[in-house]
Image (cartoon, rainbow over all chains, first blue to last red):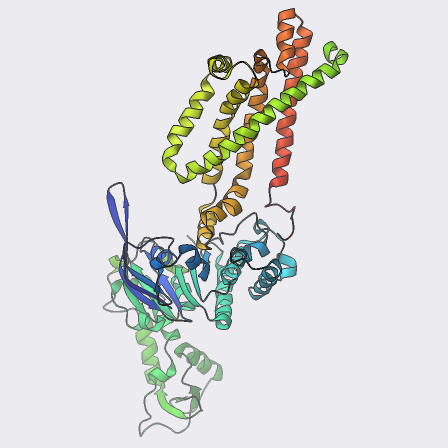
Amino acid sequence: MITLEHVSKVFTSGGQTVRAVDDVSLEVGAGELVVLIGPSGSGKTTTMRMINRLETPTGGRIIVDGRDVLTLDVVELRRRLGYVIQQGGLFPHFTVADNVAVVPRLLGWPRRKRRERAEELLALVGLPPERFADRFPRQLSGGQQQRVGVARALAADPPIILMDEPFGAVDPITRKQLQRELRRIQATVRKTIVFVTHDIAEAFLLGDRIVLMSEGRVVQDGTPADLLRHPADPFVTAFIGEDRGMRALHYTSLAELAAPAGEDAPSDGLALPGTMTVLEATRELGLRGATAGDGIWVTGDAGERIGHLPFHRLAAVLGETLAPEQSGPDPSASPEGEPSDGLPA
Amino acid sequence: MDYLREHPDRVWELTRQHVELVAVTMFFAILIGVPLGIVITRLRWLEGPVIGTTGALYTVPSLALFAMMIPYTGLGRRTVVIALTLYSLLAIIRNTVAGIDGLPAATLDAARGMGMTGTQRLVMVELPLALPVIMAGVRLSVVAAIGIATIAALMGVGGLGRLIFDGISRLDSDRIIAGALAASVLALGADWSLALLGDLLRKDTRASRGWR
């Protein structure tokens, strides 16, 4: 559990002051994966680095598990927070197993236990220990190094993990794979994760919540669906980019669209669970071909009918969401940098 | 070459003295230079004064330095060791600083973020990774010290310089060649063995030392 209260960071260099982070407040609940996203220079990395005190805030408070981080011993604090960075930041002169077991070693675990833990984690991140444990980082591909980086962050089983663009330096295919792996791992370990990225697709794929930052401030803080459906301002819309409609459909469930069945609703028709997204439903319709009735019956957890979604309404939703917006955002408000396509610069 | 063939024992003895002189020098130079280099990476303002001073010392001709020191430290071994140490400091300090400065930022960031203390970072990460660069400085210093130490023969401390100076005073080029050749071979040999040692100390290669 992490709380930031009106946190600011002002850098001073050569008489010039830069407000890297400007009055940021946010909360990360236990077991939640919160993505900090924004163009370069938006303060997202600085915000994260203040949590483990790699940067010191110039204003506000950061509270981790009920205690102000500035009152904690910095070394102890960092050992309690897992940390993953771009390109792994692995120690080239340590074997893979030694790299994974760095924090346990700092904590004074006996050698045997460290080794066991390293092997267990290597297996978890998909690197068979018998093949990888005794190699050196330079003998690994970028994606494999990144996996080691994730294993290392998990080593001492910290409740909180900070990830600073962890998949930023690997090729798009490997990145997709690593993202899926992270989701799988997160489903098992349920850590509180703060994840910094500039890749909007990554943010939507991984985030339970997305915090969009610009010029040191939080522009919007919400679930992926919130950002898509209720963008706070044109900057958010522009940052999310052209795929917004498609993404929105991915985050819209049938239950949200279904209306209580009217008198005229036919009693037959395809029944689909309310948890299904609009995109999945359209694919389902395509697969089934012709169906009876003029709409979809939406069902609840127990299979009971909770509402009806006529095809014309579904078509309207698709059209509205996917068609270019009439009163679209000011194109000049696009974020600097082109971070949204998921490809490395 | 005749001298070498006729007096191998003598040449061997002088070589031994030479090696000993340089070894003692390097012991002190490393003992002072590496920590000083580390301190500079922590206290940046020291870099100018320290590098400036050792750099200036490096430009003083060795004979002049010996002569200037005689009133204070006498004629003999002590003066030679101090002077050679001063000459050796520059390369060692500079390479220690360069070695640590040159480490990838991500690695150091990771070390800090993992919760290593300053000392742990130094011992577990910075020094081992900077070692090849530090070793390069040591090699440079050793080769230079072996050369300068021939002049130290004038201070009555023995070494291969004796052969050269004897040869000059007796107009015996054979001795000069023997001394110079032995000193060169010694320098090359030292450089080569230190390079080998450096490779053995590197840990980021396949030569795994197993679980530590």
